[in-house]
Image (cartoon, rainbow, N blue to C red; front, side):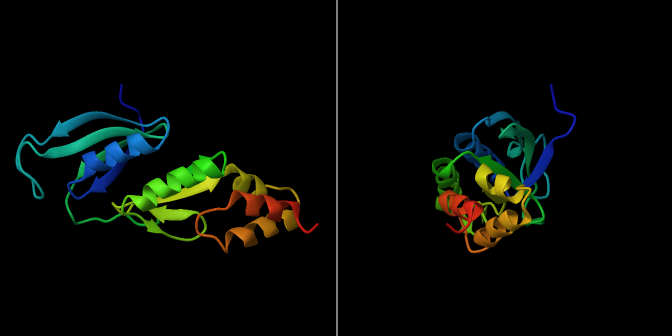
Length: 161
């Protein structure tokens, strides 16, 4: 049964490769149906992979091989909450180490240009702290990071000794 709301991600011929990478990298992810074009289209031929149904961390998606016209931007990203430094490192390194790019404050891009926020729960908890001074310390610590350092975030949350 198809979800009522599915995220459609545009790719330039690599939707199936991206879906397979996401399924291998993120928990609660899988590749579903692969649909081939019933006829020629502007960026492909009959029989080429046109769409791929997949799930990323429980979110239903479809990859559309629409060609080079549209590119991903930071205006859309997946935010993946991690439980500890090991999970943060594993996901960050998988994305960046597979042709991706490092950015700031827990953001990175995969090799297809899709943006990801690899966000430890410790960071989210720090932002939500009822003490504004604590939230500010956590925010200021994050602003100095690329990949989030959980121990440094927890130290910022505790504050000066």
